[in-house]
Picture 1: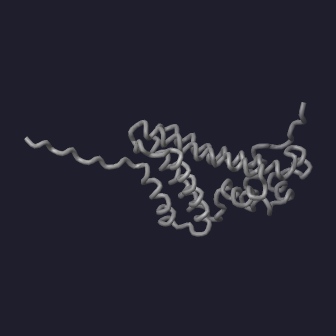
Picture 2 (picture 1 turned 120 degrees about the vertical axis):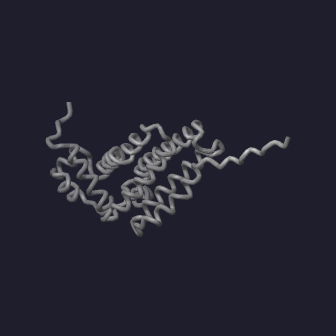
Picture 3 (picture 1 turned 30 degrees about the horizontal axis):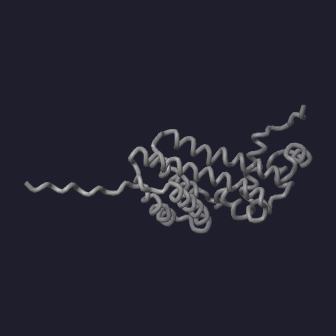
Length: 205
């Protein structure tokens, strides 16, 4: 039987998330983590096996409390087009409210960590794939419900929406301007709209 942890693990992991998110993986030391988590360095190694393993755990916690929470909440309404629109709208609002310009921990990790660590890269790619899958499911549901064009390519548009999402997150760190971010999202969201049907021609008597 494993040794019981002598600290609040949820609070400690949240501290690790905040530390990695604010500093980035490379600039975060084990000492920084231990201080933010409220535990000793030995406890950190005993519980998590070191900085790298803790980073993977922190990514999972971040995904659960942000991306997965948002997906479950928005998809639960059963309105696919509105779910996609609300997802991007919330991302824009979070980006504008981010005074420290920390951005998204997943996107930051894709840029800063994934190119140098293939295993962590796969972990990050997996979380981004979950977001794309959310877009794809709702596009398919929207087509089935007659809310979106039946000709819409769910695979291609879901990939495009993921690219728009990551672009917004990166752009907002340099220039958090509402008009700019909304203009990036608008053309992608316009793809979801039903085309205007031509009026039926009156038959001549």
